[in-house]
Length: 138
Image (tube, rainbow, N blue to C red):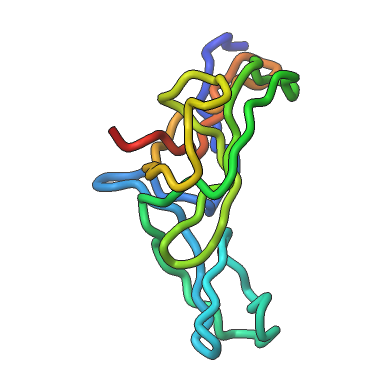
């Protein structure tokens, strides 16, 4: 049995991280135009089936709200920053924030952030769990 650590995706189909630029994978309704993340099969706005088309979402967004977590979930180390990021297409998504100190005042509502794909935590076996994060744009 090998003790080699692996990289594991936090969730299949939520983001693309191959060659070129990484992006989140969303969907747009061909009927009403609603954009969602993660991608969906049925439009949550108009409830129509077979109208959702997979689309790449913008790599940049703005801080809609945020908080500093002082009590960690399993696999995470407190303190850390969690934010609701508003993308230009409309979705507001929850994300860990990297690239800033985990203290109140490190971010402001409306700050521009950009997508990064990287380690979000380690699982119980020490494997790196890879997911999407956002960081402040310098």
